[in-house]
Amino acid sequence: MSMFKEQITADLFGTFFNAEEFADEVIIGVDTLPVVFDEYALEKYNFKADGEGLTRGELLFYAPSILFTKRPFRGQRLRIQNVSYSIIELKESAGVYTIVLEGMMS
Image (cartoon, rainbow, N blue to C red):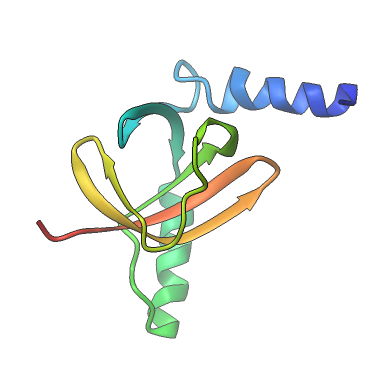
């Protein structure tokens, strides 16, 4: 691995996904993972969704893909902090998932 890639990985976990900096530790299923919630990106997503008649998201967060034991998928149900959600949008870029969730009815 190149020095540049090593430094990016160190920055991701040392700063961006550090619970003492930007990240929140949440329970997803049975795992505790560092995630970064982004309300601004969620607003942009929902603004686009309203124009296209798509489902509105309730949560949008970034999570390091390496910490997931299985790749998440659209429609998958997740329990986050004991609340049930369904993945409505999933993207991966540079080792980071962007996940948009909608609430599930109990």
